[in-house]
Image 1 (spheres, rainbow, N blue to C red):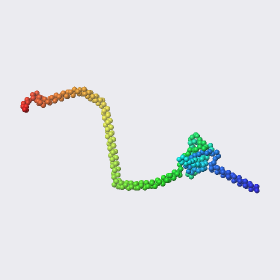
Image 2: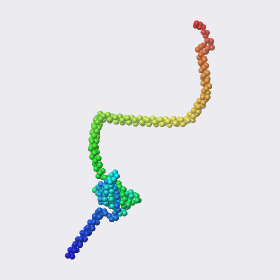
Image 3: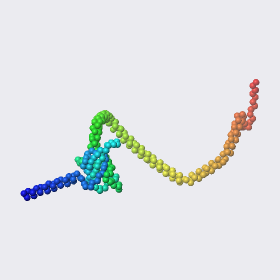
Image 4: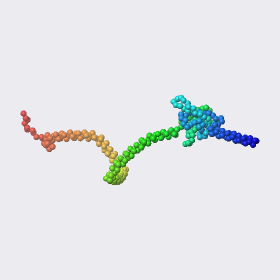
Length: 289
């Protein structure tokens, strides 16, 4: 009888220890912590978030989502979450919370990105939020766009291929043997023209060199005779000054000489013998009545 009581006692102790271990594991899994503090955050969409979702701070788990409550009013419905965060955890006032998915098959969680402010949020405060990109919705949108784009693209490619085939046919028609020969002749003529231009350029270079030599010689000639040219210019200037100072008298004498020549020519017309000193003939003509 005493032995049976000992067995019952050992079984009871084992069951109690197992239950305590089970409770400890459940407590560990749910993330409940003593002295946790409550914060709040609001989102427009909370796809994949439910009670008990993890709350991480720069990737380190500091709490969990206690509850989600819809907030009606304004332009649209928002969802307010109650976060249970480890007590005494400092959260800068400009920190940002967003819905994140750490892995492809991992559950979504609330990720808090640390801010730079020296001020700290107090328990019960609202953490600023940022809407995360819904990858599934984005993939679905891209799929819909592709569904609309691929048929149109296939039609465009078909039209493009038709145009390319038509262009290829035209090019094949244009590039027959006769036209290819003409193109070859054109390139040969272009080569000949290029050679002629090269020769012409060489001739221009020679002429330019000769002109340079002529200019150098002219400069040397002027430099050698600079003093003589200067004296000639000064003498010419003096002659021009003398002529300009007597130009009025010369013009006057020329005018007088012109009048004398006019008078002499008139006398010679009247009496050609005047040049020999004879008198003019007597005019015996009877005047008409």
